[in-house]
Image (cartoon, rainbow, N blue to C red; front, side, top):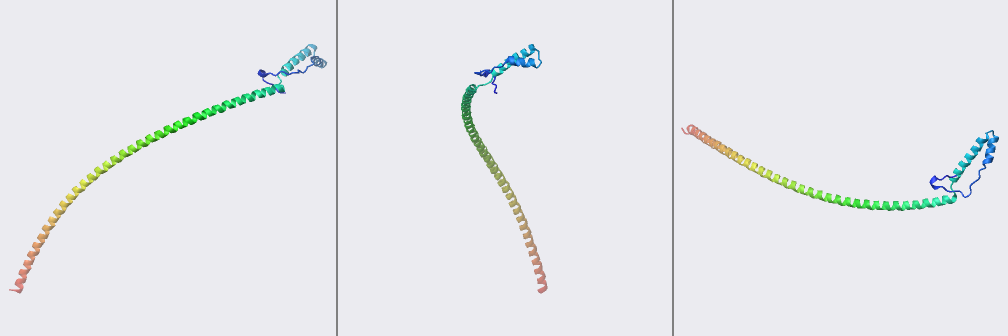
Length: 184
């Protein structure tokens, strides 16, 4: 037996009859006092009537099933519409985020290119300055080396001249010795 909730009571067309007199007599035969047996028979009859009144009929079940199917179809339609709307909103939001991200990436790219160009210019400037400083230092060192070389050349020239003079003096001394030895 199927009991429906109290809000959706379905009435039976044919209410089965409960014989309260027969039930009361059965209790009395079993040794239960008459007032108590009669009270139990009435209470049970009322309980059965209440329960039987709540039993569902096949027509009531069909009607309830149709109602539930209609409600489910309506809810399904509502859910599909809501899901479609949310899908559209999400696609729109994703497209907007994509556009924003592309814009931010373009801005970052432009900023990075500008920074790189600035750093390149700074590095070129520093390299040019360092090159000029190195050329200046190399020029100064070259001038110092040329001066040192001139000084060394002059010193060597002086020493060569001194050697020439010494060789000349020695040659004269040898010539004088040879003249005395061979031409007395």
